[in-house]
Image (cartoon, rainbow, N blue to C red; front, side):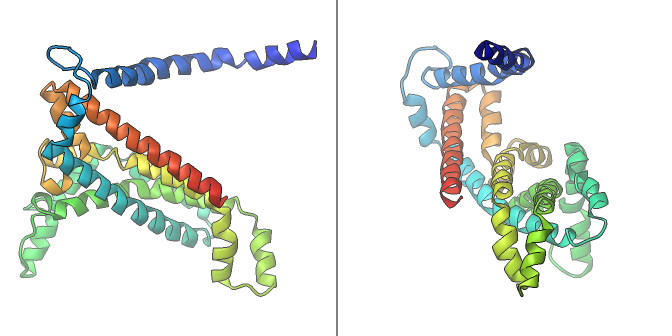
Length: 283
């Protein structure tokens, strides 16, 4: 009787989960399975070509450039964002009115992408404010959006956009640590650095894992800024996988796009699994 009652209680949540499950199936799982299928077929004739599409993209120079830039962008942005946001959070947690400041940290996320792009163009365009200041001071004009500097403009955009949210996650994690731990350590003679490395950081491992995964996934979502600033074919330094996918989609090269999407998904999934294993071992 008790088992039957428990089963009925466990089944009560199904009607609430069913709409979300159906949405994930229709808009995520089924399209992904279809993309995997398309990666083994020709886009025009629809005939089975095996791994031919994967061979084509592996020899494609645009794909190699996009992969290199996306990997470099992720490798540069993640350490900058995580380290910078941590030290800002550590400093903010010492302020008295931190709870009031937390709400202001989400402001960058509230700014529409189009507005952000407009600001970036006003600042970094060839005739923008920054170049105007440089030329007035006697310097040489820098083509921020049409040179290798475009990569760093994109990095700055990503860090600014995600900094407030990441700081908020750090602050939430730090405020969840009991002050009795650090107070007891200070009574025993521990200084600020020792409290940071031996008490605060070890207790922030779950927060660090969450921030790393979110930041890693967000690094693949900067296409809107890059596309609106420089179009479908920006400078080589900021030509990312999203640009390549967009151009293949416009040209209806769905077979190559599907094969590339499968490759990218495999790499991201493998990276997350490896990161999870590393975290489990350290934990």
